[in-house]
Image (cartoon, rainbow, N blue to C red; front, side, top):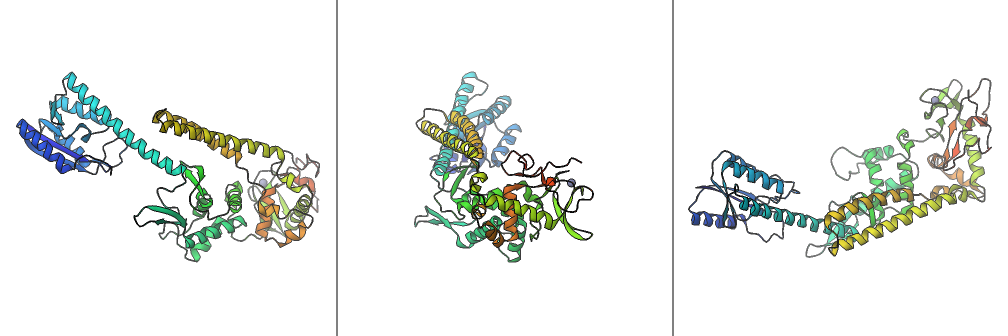
Length: 480
Ligand SMILES: [Zn+2]
């Protein structure tokens, strides 16, 4: 009989199996004992055969082609798991051997896959081999989860940090890389004070600051945004896209700056704010009440005006609108209860409830992890529970995501608000307006020479369900 030998060693460092050379020697001994002639040896080194394996096994493919061509009468392996740890692969190999009348030999025994008993025995071995591969995968996942829970980094190093290792090469700590951390802090500070990601990226490129991944493409606005949305920089551990707790590395950005960056970066307005230098208070902030379009400053015969850029529906003199908006804003921020108005208490109740809910669900998930570690539920069962709970935690986290009154606004509140306002840059002032106000500018009517406040009747304070007109702050806006 013509025998073909297949050997394989996986990359599992704890694999106590034998080397491919040892496997081949064992298989050759079996062939010699049985009087088979070895016609070909196929060998995959460092290849995992489980269904989770990502690498191709070129020799395994070649082996199948060889068997299909009818060039051998018996396939010899050291043990059943050498060929596959995956039931589907076993079935396909079994069908091939049965169809071609090829003997199937491992662990020194020969099986005839057309026989019921032999199909049962080899099928059972394939099941056991698959279970072993599943367990290996579970062990790896458990280690990843344990690292995540302990706040230890795994995988790719986050830009802005470096890792310290002990003499034995073991991980000791992740600490800020001062050069890179300075880049992150600068970007955060500038975004928080109202600068656009676009202008920061341009500036970084002009200064030749290398990007996180190197390369010659330079910084892009989305790269800056992505960087500043990474919770790793406030010392949070992220697993499967969710914050799972505190990391064991120090923060690079402080919590307040980070929160401010989030509120700016997730604002839908951001897309239109590409101009590098902010010159006018309400550019892009004021919205056309007729069509919802953004406004931009244009020269309108004799004066500069905010004009609807979509349908040119509305136009209002810069100084007139700025003066009115600033006056309303100052009045609001100088009130003794200004901070309460900015953060309505009923809102905070909802936020607290959501925070509590997220914490409870995290605790419940931890209990399930503990139960799984005690073998009280199966890995499959845990996976189902984990998926459900993680989704619910994400939902609660989202509802709990409440940016407190941003420091920029909080520092303004008080009787001398006007002096403090005057010390802000236009970019910061604009930041304050867009944080507090949804400004809608309605149509003017023929003959009106100054701003009729009723044109702003559909504007509202952020978080307020009622418009300025509904609050009686200004008159009802005209509909035509
Ligand atoms: Zn318009």
